[in-house]
Amino acid sequence: MDDKLIAAVEQLNEDKVFKLVEKRLKAGKDPVYLQEQIRLGMLKVGILYEKGEYFIADLIMAGEIVKNVLKIILAKPEDQHHNKTGTILLGTVQGDLHDIGKNIFASMVEAEGFEVIDLGIDVPPEEFVVKTKEIQPQIIAMSGVLTLALESMKKTVAALTAAGLRDQVKILIGGNPVNRISCDYIGADAFTNNTDEGVTYCKNWVAG
Ligand code: B12
Image 1: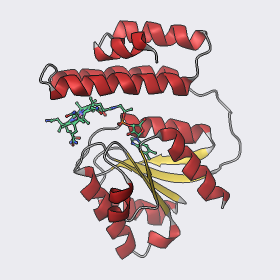
Image 2: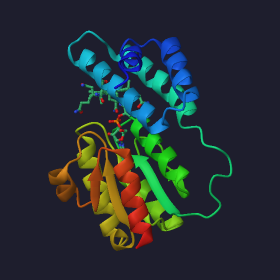
Image 3: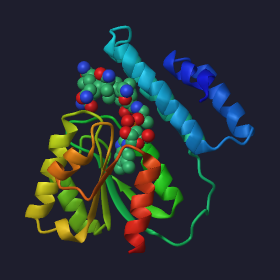
């Protein structure tokens, strides 16, 4: 574990986070490892928020720092892939505005050659339905960090089923509150709170 980097994120020390990340990247550290350290720092931010030591403004600041530093960590070399692996329709579900985990997942599947149509945050079920008809993705990936996101995911799968689209797509759900029980309740094909595992699901699905 990279204690220094984790602490810099926890202390919302943007300068230090950037300096440490740049240093680690130059030294050849794996971007996926660095991204995981950032996530661990964010977990500590969440704990301080729960304890009442940090406030919403701190969460917003933490979100901005991480968003900016991930641009450096996940910057991908141009022309990495020429053949499209598949298409993924992605979004943070209705009522949820958290997008850092979603954005990490997007960068990772793009690096594997997937085309990602990112609907952004607070995406209503109907928007997933309309875009699924339009784009015909092989995979729909939904992100949610709040507990309430589980209900939105369930509504989204129900809306896809009602529109007759459910059987045409694989559905992946990701984020802190997802687990086997919620996956069954929602009616998704797979769940994970680990982006690497999410990428593996997507690769396996398009490989048949
Ligand atoms: C930053 C942050 C915010 C920022 C978000 C900025 C942004 N652009 O995303 C802001 C300030 C907007 C915010 C707002 C709120 N937040 Co907030 N937030 C956080 C915090 C500190 C970090 C979240 C984060 O980005 N983590 C880092 C990323 C990398 O981790 P991640 O999102 O979990 O994603 C990883 C996996 O889950 C997974 N993953 C995620 N999505 C997907 C999708 C796919 C397809 C796959 C494969 C994988 C995957 O991969 C990622 C990488 O490992 C967490 C605390 C925590 N411990 O998580 C609270 C937290 C999530 N927030 C919380 C709360 C309560 C709120 C507010 C309600 C606060 C309020 N009173 O207003 C609002 C809700 C706004 C809304 N409607 O969404 C609670 C949620 C409690 C709950 N169980 O519902 C938490 C847990 C804090 C706490 N401990 O109380 N928040």
